[in-house]
Image 1 (spheres, rainbow, N blue to C red):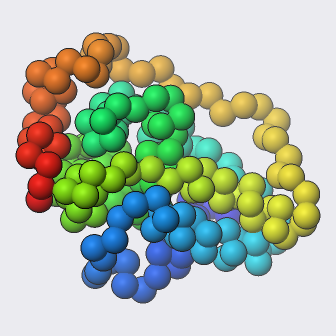
Image 2: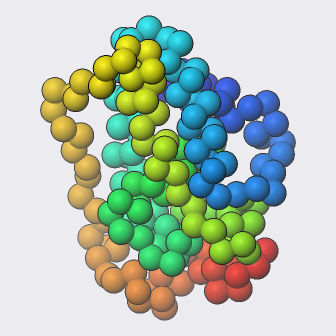
Amino acid sequence: MDIDEFWALIEQARGPQADTDPGPEVGPEVGGAVAGRAVALLARRPVAEIRAAGLVLDGLLAGSYRAPLWGAAYLLNGGCSDDGFDYFRGWLVVQGREVFERVVADPDLLAGLPVVRAAVAAGIDLDCEDALGIAWDAHREATGAELPLPGSPVRLPDLDPEWDFHFDDHDELSRRLPRLARLCSEGTP
């Protein structure tokens, strides 16, 4: 399984209406449902593809390990620990390839997404821990065994030194992520 096949799997799990109707529902259960459908779809594939999907997901998570995105998660979720940032990136994966790639490149674009605006208005954190285990859960479902660990651990990149400030510095975050900071301070779409 390559990256294109992985994203096709996520889109299939999101369903045919995903691009045209983001739906008013937000929250962990929605992302968890997409992750659950992805697990079921992936579990039907050969074990080698399941393992490859795990490597693709690891690569996406490592590639999205960026300080500007962490700052966006911090704003949206009212703070963001290491684990919280993992769960936020899991949520971002289940939003699909287009959203994922656009937001990783420019996290301030989150402010324009209907699902984000709805979550802010409802006071709901954007996270999906279940997305992190798509390959693990599919492997367990398909084989009854745990997914073997990769030969070497995933290396996360160093965070951007230009973002080396405390995210509690609202003025600095607002300067760097103005649309998102404005949305979060208003609290409504």
